Amino acid sequence: MSVALDLTTLYVIAALGMLVAGFVHLITVATGRFGSWAALWGGGHLVVGFGTMMAVLNDSIGVAWAPNAGNPAAAIGYALIAGAVLRFARPEARLAPLLAIAAVLAAPLIVSDDPAYFHFRVAYLSTVRAGFDIVVVIAAVRLARREIVADRLDRRRTVRGHRTDVSGSRMAGLR
Image 1: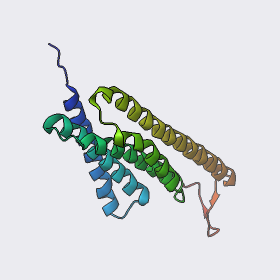
Image 2 (image 1 turned 180 degrees about the vertical axis):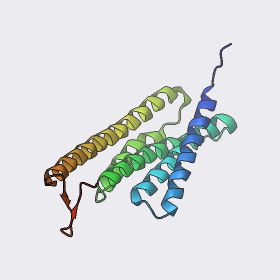
Image 3 (image 1 turned 90 degrees about the horizontal axis):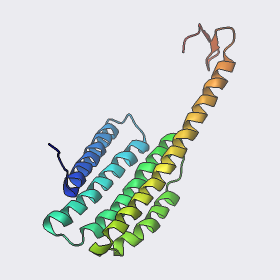
Image 4 (image 1 turned 60 degrees about the vertical axis):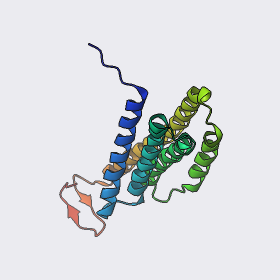
């Protein structure tokens, strides 16, 4: 017995997953323990989730304008998620250029609503998402390298199994 999932079911699952992830991140922001990166991450997931849900609305109830709003929203949401990773890696990171690029990339999706070009929109949006995924990978690799270098520098500062903290007292090898 094989089970086949239709496209609408896949979109609903993806949308709900994004919406839940967005709310979870925003709840953590409400605790005050995390910086603006968590708000961007949660907001980006919400935007992508709502954008994905727009495709479902069009398929299910025939809201013709939904893809014209949902697809560009998804592109902006992907940029917000990538911006969150950049902001996590570097709190001073400027996000305006990234969001401007996302707006330019989202523009063709606003005017493209012909059902005959559905596969082109999916391919285009997948390429946009892949581009923002590459931004995330680059930021993560740079962050990892920076942490490795900082760890090595920290180890070099360790003298004979003892470490000097900022106040000048010595801690017996505790980290």
